[in-house]
Structure formats: structure tokens, C-alpha cells
Image (cartoon, rainbow, N blue to C red; front, top):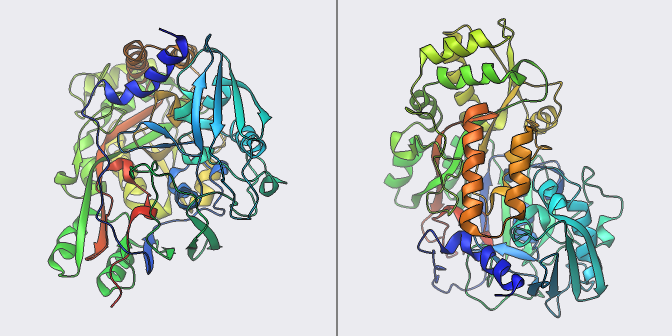
Length: 523
């Protein structure tokens, strides 16, 4: 079989070999019109998705922008701005042909030069960009419709790396003066909505772009047709969950994102609202600074893991046992090809005092405070997990100093190894292990273990899906030996909708596809 066909098959195998592929939900057709109003908990200083690795801050760009590929409902990358793609016979290059007739919101035609400019910037960014840089040695545009990726070695991962929001394509003109750390002045993209207004302390207004060139395939998360039912999509910044709940009940908003599970009964008992529970949404975690400081001591991290009881931590954060599972896999969706529990110590979630004593004795820890960063806007997910864990650790003489700050300060501090020892975070399901931000050495936490780095290089250059799964299991084993991060459990996501909202998301892979959600009928 030709190598380029093997590689294309390997790209798709991650979804097809291990599960019944989720078929696109064929939504009822809804009329276009109206405004979809969404209450959100936080906003980034800029809508530019490249300058932050914090996924919650990609929401605006996810509606406005598109990439060469987009993930479907089974976590498989599908062509979006790309018309087609093909690997060379020796597997050392990937050629992508762009669709005809595409243009940016500014009116400029999309060309291969814009793709090169966008992805050159992306490859110098943290997180997934670093993995892309490792896989791709050069990006060229032989003509306006063709982009060629020279690969560091034969690898099937590039379409998956280009299916995330950080790798969306913007016009080269809009990128003037921008860098991987300096935001663009706006978002000049190709998606179904234009950015009308962005106020970090208030919200976002996005207006349907009538010149949008949609694909014709059935809608499936970020791939296929995008219906753009609403005339406008508005994000309203409402940091307090209770405010989002009350605003939903009173009809001020149509969707209330990220609600705690203890609001479930209130929404279900109201005749005009519904609580939507999305299972296996994300892992709740703490990430350690493995580069310097007190948490760089691997034996201290091992002691911390064995000191923790996960049930009270998850209960404190989520509030209802029906809304979480004590699942140790770093891939929260069990339907993913990459799901594994390899290397997990027996009795996950249960403290082991003997192990704590053993590892503390082997460590250099002398009671120094562990500076644990939390974002004030993420009170339940960040603060309540941290405070519950710190109380458990105190019983063993392990001291935690919780540093609570606004999101912007939290993001800045966690990127500086001198300012933190640990930070609260979360991990969703990714299309490929090479996309998992925690596994990239440039991600805050800075896990540069040589064995991990070698395994990441190996998985990025291996074609056979089962062989790649075996490599990922080795990485999973290593993570459960060195504990550069610790998972508390897997939480469901609950949000609220007004009755009449059409085609709301009910599976994790559809998070953020508001372009396929219809506003409730206007009274």
C-alpha cells in the first residue's frame, strides 16, 4: 500500500478502530433569525486564541474563525478550509489544496500566503503550537491555492494539530504587528460570524456574515455545514454562576454556561428552562512546576498523590456524585481511541499513608509552602479543589499557600516558573496525544523529562494506530510515576438553556459550536 494512503488511514483510525463512531446529529431545520444570548464566566483580554493556552478563552475565535481542518463529533479531523490533502510517497510532506471562493470578513480573498502567515505564528506559540513546530520543519505556498508542509519525519498528526482553535487562519494583513505573545487587533477570519464588539469586562457581540461559504456536508461539531441560525450571538460576561442561573430563569439570556450541579433542580423545576448535563466533559487537575522550586522534587509529588482522597475533592468542586466519576484516565471521554488507565496505582483516589511517609522521607521537603495558583473566576473548579486538597495535605505536614487572582494574572503567573509551584487546571479530550498541552515542555509545568520527550517524538513519527496507542500508554505510565500533574476525577458539564433553544450541545465534542444552535422563538 502506498505510504500516503497508510498515513491518511492512520489519521482516521484513532476514531474508527476503538468505538462506534458518533454520527452527526441531523438537527431539525430552524429558521434563521433572532439573537442567541449566552452567559459566560470569563473572558480573555483579547479574542486572539494564539496568545493563550487556556481553552476557555478560545470561545470567541471558535465561532468566528476556521482552520484547515475541524474536529467532528467523534474527535476526528475533517477538511474545512482545505478542499483536499495528500501525503507524498515517502511521507515527508503534506500538500493541502484550499477550497475555491473563500474570503475573509475584510473582503480579502483567502490565499495560501495567509495560511502560511497564520501557521508560522501558531508554530511559535505555546502548547499545541510547540507540537506542530516539532512535526513540521517548513511551510510553503507554491501558489495561491496550495500549502505544502515539509515534515520533520513521516507523521499522521498534522491534520489533528491543525483542527484546534489555536490554529485558525487569519488574514496576513490582520497579523501585522502581532506575534505568538502579542495579540491581533481583531479577528479577520473566514467563519460564519464577524466580530462586532469585544469588551473584556462586559462581553462579545458577533454578527452573522452573509457572505460565509459553508461546506455542504452534514453538520458535525466544528466540521461540515455551519447553519448560523442566529442573526447575532452575544456572550455576556457573568462571572457569578448564580447570576447566570437567575438571568436564564428570568429570560435575560438563552444559555447559561458552566453551572454548578446544585442548580440542577432549580432549572428542571422551572417550566421555561432545562438543565443540560454533558457527561465525561473534562478532567479536574493540578499541574506542578517540575522545572524549579519545591514541586520540582519528584518524591514530593509522589507523596502528594498518595496523600489525596479524590472523592471529597470532587464532591467539593462538583457538589453531586452523579455529576462526576473517579476515573483516572488522562483522556476523559471513554469513547476516545486514546482512553487508557495504564500505570494507574491500585486504589486510585484512596490515600496510602505508608507511601506518603516513604516518599516524604526520600524527598528534600522541609515544610516549605507550595504556592498553588487558582483563578478567582473559576471558584469551584479551581479554589474548592485546591482548598480541599490542601486540607488533606496538611495532615501529613505538606503545606499549601493558595494564591487566588483574576484570570489574566493567573495565566501570566503560571507561565513564570519563578512565581508558582502548582496551579489548578482542567483537561478535555484531545484529538491526539501530541495535542495534549500538558505533555508539551513549553506548557506551564515545564515537564521536560528525557524519557517523556523521547516517547512524544516516537508517537509523533509512528504511523500504525495500535503502535501509537501502546506508546501513549507508556507516557500514561510515566505520568503516574512522576506526577507532573495529578487528576482528581472526571466531571460532567452542566449548563442551562431556555425552552425552545434549538439543537443544544449534549456531547463533549460539540462544546462551543454555537453557530449550529438556534435561538428560542421570539415572543
